[in-house]
Amino acid sequence: MKERQSGWIGKFVLGSTVGGGLLLALAVWNTWLLQRLASQPPPALVQLSDGRTLPAVSRPHYAREPAVIRRFVSEALQALFTWRRFIPGGVGQKDLQDPGIVLSNRATIPSSVFQAGFFLSEDLRTELLRQLAVLSNKALEGRTSQVIFTASFVGNPEAVAHQTNAWKVTVIGQQVVYAPSHLEGVALPFNKEIYVRAIDPPTMTSFPQTPIEQAVFQVRNSGLEIYAIRSLPKDQSPIS
Image (cartoon, rainbow, N blue to C red):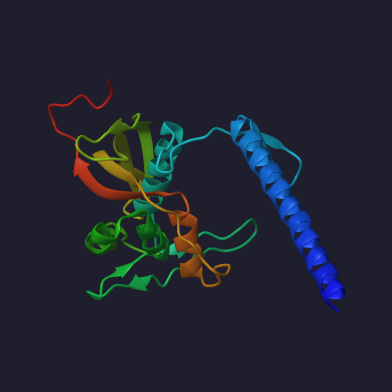
C-alpha cells in the first residue's frame, strides 16, 4: 500500500516538474518574442481595405499636421459663414426650403450653420450661433438670397504662446451677399485670426443615426475645434 502511494506521489511530483518546466519555457519564449517585436521599427505603410497603401508616421497623440489644421479651418469657416434659406437640390432636382433651427433665444439659424456649430468649442458655440442667427436674418432678404464665404488666404498655423496643442491661423476672405436687390453681389471683408486646438475625437458605441449625431461625429472626428475668432489687428499685414 505504501509502495503504491509512493508511486503516485512520485508521478505527481514528476508531472508537476515537467509542467512547470514547460510553463517556464513558454514564458521565456513569449518574453523573447516581445523583446524582438519591441526592437522592430514601426510599420512604414498601412494597407487599406481596398488594397491601397499609405505611409504611416508615428506622431504624438495631440500632434496635428499644418495641412490638416488649414483644411479644418477652411472647411469650418466655409460652413459657418455661408448662409442660405434653401437647401440646394441635386442634379435635376429643385431646391428645398430650409425651415432652419430655432435657438434658445428664439432666433432662427440656417440648418447647415447650426450643424457647423460643432466645429466650435462648447463655450464659443452658443454665443456665436446666436450672433450668426441675427446676422444671417439681416443679410437674407428672401428665399433666393444667399451669402457665400470664400477665403483668399489661409495662413500657416502658428503655435499659441503658453498653450499646448493650440494654433493661430490668419484668414483673409470675404462674404459675398447675393439678393434680389443686388444680384451682382456685395462683398464684405473677412479678416480674422482663428484659434484652434487639438481635442479627443468622439467615441460612439454605435453608428450615428440622426442628422445631428452624424454632424457631430463627422465634425468632431477631425480631432480639432475652434475656440476663438478675433479680428485681425489693423496694423498687421494679413499676408507675410
